[in-house]
Image 1 (cartoon, rainbow, N blue to C red):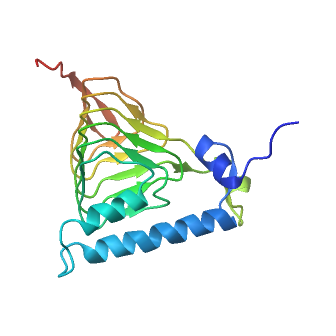
Image 2 (image 1 turned 90 degrees about the vertical axis):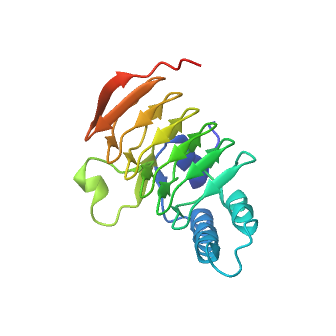
Length: 196
């Protein structure tokens, strides 16, 4: 007999799950509260440069030692976000972490960028009329990533190490190490082989 999975376990493994679930409701509420606490703190008289990173370490599933997050960040759950050391994300970014978002060492994400892991059935009868069944496809980004402003990364994308994404790009598919990509949809511009 197969084990019965919770809706949260189904969600993070990419199985269909019910969005309206008490555990998921509590996790979303927790994320909203920490989001609000963080965004209200940054730039206020209370901002001592230490409280913000402490909130992010509570909000995210795991982080490296040095994590810089600018104001305006919005996450769905937070607990499904895992970032490496020397991580930087600029203002007004959305991390839709219904599924896992894993980002490596030294990543830089430009302002107004959006990473989406949630998706929905293509069949209209399964999507319309109050169905709350969803599924996720995680996002994985390697080390030394640089994404310009207004980059959108869609569910299921994997980007290798040293990938650069041009501003305004919509990334709909995966790219290997050292790719420079841009456009809507993003296409390979050239390979960028590190010299050091």
